[in-house]
Image (cartoon, rainbow, N blue to C red; front, side):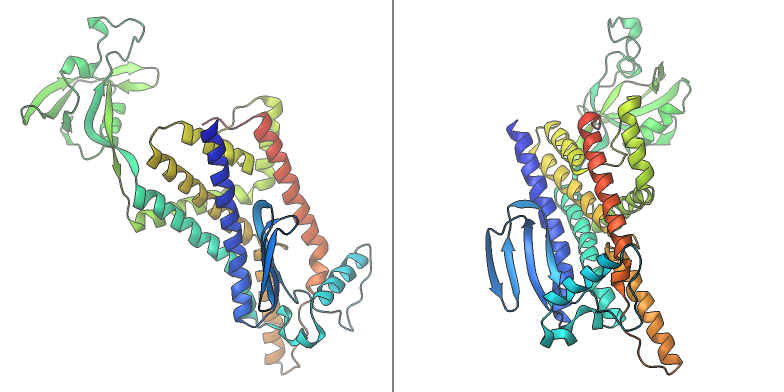
Length: 409
């Protein structure tokens, strides 16, 4: 129980740090370009403690599930040619009015909407790129600094029987037991093929179709190589010889961490692209009673369940730390991918708007026309609220699913 509570607390702190650093990526790039930032808060809810440094109020709030920053001048005032009509007219006007109210009149020239296209892209992509960097750092700490247990070609133990676990008679002895293999023996070759990794052994045995093969192993007691024969036995899960590998902790290098980051990115991207369908599939599992695996889409509740299960599955504290770091790495990659979606209010939507605005400005420049007014971002807010509502709906639906039909690892 205590271990589970500690795991959840660490996960919440990790998520808060990740989201806060995301916001810091927006905040400090904006400040670097002279855009005023009125608030930078860690957490949500009533302010517990705050201090104004320069023109920015920094503070902490009690609900540690993220953070936010207020960059001033996100929405330009209405231009003469902008006519707000239709059912969303009041919403658009209110957004503009709120943006105008937060920006002092003498600071209008410093508003975000006056930034050049490259600067806007840097500010809006700054937070997302911080998540990508954090994801890589967490993976590097987990797999490079701590490492992970990996199977070796050395035998850890012999499985007495592979075909009849209830009663092990001599006729049922596993192929490894019959071949005389013992703990700490090192497999040198199998079926005439040199063995360099544990996967070499499993692949050769799986493809053997039960034929008798030559086995060469090194006995540590004598230091000599022993040559014998072994015949894999058929089981319900394929052919087996009945050995378990000795596991040793091995550290990866930075290129391995980069490859893990890429795999996390590509896997998450496929999931995010089909988020509505994945959410529908997860919700359907409540009624179909179909077991869910860790490969499906999750809420933070589901992530917490996995974190608790993983930490409880081992007594090795280093493995627990590595597991948490890896999980936080995956969460940051998920935040990175999610914010790449080219729809407001996500960062990708702001980047697309900046690119559109840049194209319009470039076109006007080439045609020797006056510089166009900043893009009327407020008109996109109805779509932004729809996307925001969809994300909230998916989030709450997944929380419900993770409670009723939790992930089974």
